[in-house]
Image 1 (cartoon, rainbow, N blue to C red):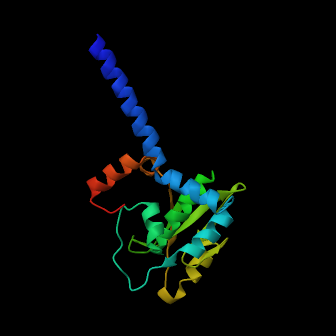
Image 2: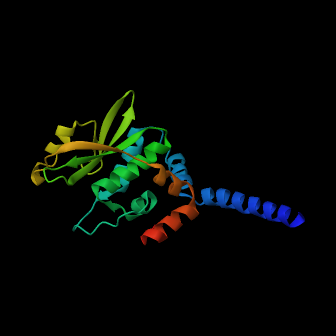
Image 3: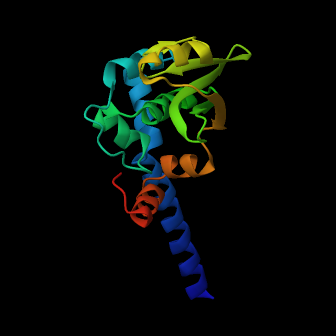
Length: 184
């Protein structure tokens, strides 16, 4: 019986340490600190921060799939979906609902991704490549006339449960990234 009590106490201490230190080192804490340090308190202020701190990729390097928003922000040069994910992460921390919107081309593939943020009872578009907000889907497509981008919008929720789990615990994040063999 005494051994069982010791194992239970040890298990509880380990679980508490896992949760507390996992959060203390987490991306969630990192983004909350970033918000506080930069005095970001609205989606528009988050967008201004992202516009100042990221650029669209140059020379078309291959994207690294399954990386984290913290890793993406550190890269600085991001693809459209990565920029939208970084902005969504910050805005979600502010308490806003977000979703990624893929522009689906005639071949069924996504040709571009932008972010929608639910504000004041409506969805507002934010494009981190064009560095503009409040545009309609059609106006976003017009911004890419040089690429002849055409397609319909397909929104998808972000973040999902997986994103929230790895963002809130350092150890879970590194386990997931190791399993996927990607940098984090």
